[in-house]
Image (cartoon, rainbow, N blue to C red):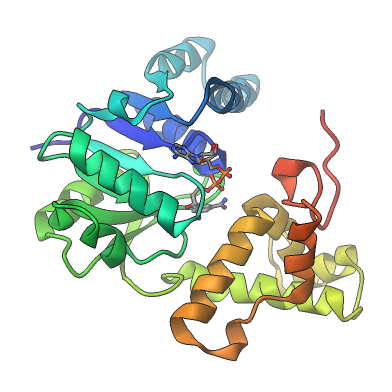
Length: 285
Ligand code: NAD
């Protein structure tokens, strides 16, 4: 039983990236968000991203049109009823995700697999809120999805072997490199990456160096392709904070306490690239 039609909940940074990756690989995708404006922003982002590939001659204009034609949009979860797999990529909020999973559980086909792209929330917990816990799995993609090969596949305690195998096969079929990860706070990559970024924010807050100098230090001293603060802007300061809170709450280990400056920047509304300002500025083009 193969996976055909794919639903994506959320048309933000990750939702539109996931939709693009599947559509380019020739899969039918329904991309859903709460309103027309959010969905349109997602479609515009995909179109601009594919235009760049056409310009670089990595894709023809016809291939772009074909990929765009594979994506339909929706503003209600009901539009995902006949999907074989739904990947939830809505905002990182446990109550929001539990509500979405409960609704998807009610309205999708009995054999639909429900996946979450959550960076940090327990898959076991999301699965327990449904009547199909064996068909719930974590599919944690990396940003920007079209470029990043890794996808962490997270089995909850209840996830069936058949669900894992189907999703692993699908991920490989679109050129991704899946790794199997135990369900635990932050999984593997964020468990290491987010504390490193958080430490960079501590260093900035303590005045050790400027944001540009901290990033330059990690690029030149550790050969990182992007500095931790620019990476935080790319990920989103809200997402970084949410991961740190889950690591902290999940382990009660003070080494995971969020940097005060990170919290304060969010209070100011600085979300990173998506709001035009984070540790660096991103003027609208
Ligand atoms: P984002 O803020 O860019 O997008 C979230 C989208 O979800 C928004 O468009 C919002 O309108 C939508 N949304 C909110 N409530 C919804 C609902 N009820 N139904 C449908 N859509 C709804 O966030 P993002 O960075 O794309 O993150 C999405 C998920 O992916 C989060 O769980 C996050 O932890 C995870 N993630 C993020 C990254 C990253 O680098 N940003 C990487 C891996 C995983």
